[in-house]
Length: 305
Image (cartoon, rainbow, N blue to C red):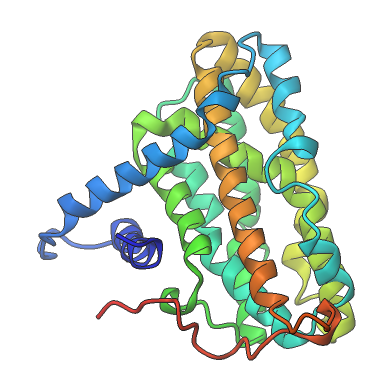
């Protein structure tokens, strides 16, 4: 199956599995085939990073140093998309970009909650603290997920999966699949840790790009918050979660490394697609001139009835 239809199917499959339901909800006869497709997707993604992940050391301190090095040398780091967003993106271009980001976000709080199940105490406690921050420390106006949703609503962002490029759907599908399957629990730790590690620089660029477009500081709060808070989250994640898990189970190092690289590789794939979409120009034009009617339906995004 081509990537577009595959990831649209998996996106709706993920939504259905995460949504609260009742015992009389009808079973879908496509569940088993979709699980098989999801597992094949995960194994393909693992295979692409296996060689690099095998180089991760099993000593806890050395592993954390290796992991933190992904901030500079990991897939997608330093992508030129983000300085461009900060300096040159128009409002329609930024709206299109945010639609992809909203679709690929997958709900960090829920992913952390799923990942922490039956984890050892030290790691579990840090995951709980991270979750509590994501939940606004018990205050609805400070919850992180709704902050992004509110920004999207203010900008009339359309994040309907059928209008989203498959690379962004694949990113969300990856994170959900890792968090839902306990065989990939350590992979999920690595993937989410990679988000905390690498997000601050990117969200700073996006925040700077939104400001000149007339987006208020209050509306941009999701990005300004994560520019600083994720630095603290990453330090605590690496110290309390990664160090303790690898010390207790050295095999976890490779699984965590695979998860981190899978997430970064999926992000890099998104950045490449976003650049190609936003910079789709005549050869004589520069990226500052605009790209195309980004509010139009994408011809390569396949809707499933």
